[in-house]
Length: 47
Image (cartoon, rainbow, N blue to C red):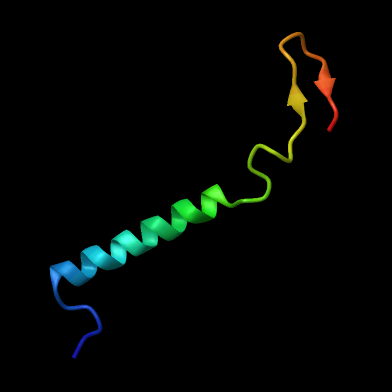
């Protein structure tokens, strides 16, 4: 018997993969907080 055999099971699997991907993107350590901010006039603000 296959592990996934119904459309509902495939939909649940796809939903879990997408949720995990989004969670991984949201919790990535180098997202925005770790980068240097650049002010509108071009000066860099060090953290």
